Length: 417
Ligand code: UD1
Image (tube, rainbow, N blue to C red; front, side, top):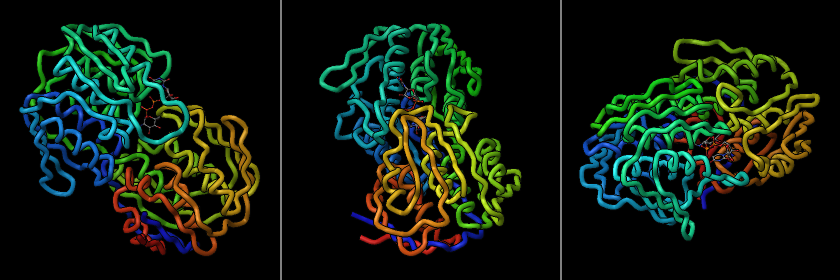
């Protein structure tokens, strides 16, 4: 069991380069096996979720080879096994994309119900509804989702809830269905667009990704492609928030500033100065932070995946701050950890009321999930004294080289066994 140990109250200064987007990578790797061909994926983040998928795809018969730390060659010409067991997929939620990808190419798949972070009920009914609409038979047997189709046909699918996973999964399968598919009320997240762009380079015909209506004309097959994954919006946001809480001056590089609009606007509202470059944002935090309200929503709203990090920041904004979590029904499990550090927070359903305190105090805390772990780092960076964070394995699922990136900005942070 590894721990992160942080001696807090050091201002973060300097530059940090952002890795490729985790949530794009975990969709694009399954998409790559939809071609009976070779794909090269660049700017892959070096994180545990990618390692898990690498292992799963390899077990299916894909030949996966890292050409360097961030570039993967995937040869999918000899895939024979269209199933993934619970043992393989238990760590990563996004294993559900294997269903859409395999259903599209092989017209069958058997994948154990996905694992990943636990923030309440995480159904995949919309994914399955979409597969059925495309002509597949779907069973859930002993916690394994089984999908089969003689052939897939296009369909008009209205999503009664905006879902990133269902949008991407249906898009994957529909690329290789006969005829036209329309997905209405689709998710608009940057990684939906990135996956669509990759599929289009592979020969798919997808229009409208990034809007709430996606139109797909099925093609008989996809071919190999080379692709560079977009920068990680959530990693970038984590470093921006860390700069803000430490009174720092940090340039967050290699990002798409447009993806950060919602966070940038919120930080400006809090008295943080934001300077936007072409592919970077400088965050300068040299004034007292002002209290705010935050409501999480699907893109382009405030991302739920930055909610825990934002909560950590708001613990030291004097006055009352209110967070409303609109996406997940139980994403406040980490709050007790912040309270151990002296935060004043009360929860009522989806609403967290945070009364700012002058400072947090370091103590032993636990990463209860991936982004909660990032929130613990942010709180530890601001706290007086030493914070020890257990369960670092969650953080490693989604953050590349976390202690070195923070260390290079001047944080006193180390990893110990
Ligand atoms: C993705 C992200 C996750 C992020 C979430 C919301 C990946 C790998 N993960 O998760 O980090 O927190 O988007 O931005 O990209 N829902 C249903 N039925 C379904 C599917 C979803 O009711 O079939 C509900 C969920 O319970 C949730 C909401 O829809 O309340 C949004 O979930 P969704 O966008 O699907 O999240 P994920 O794709 O799992």
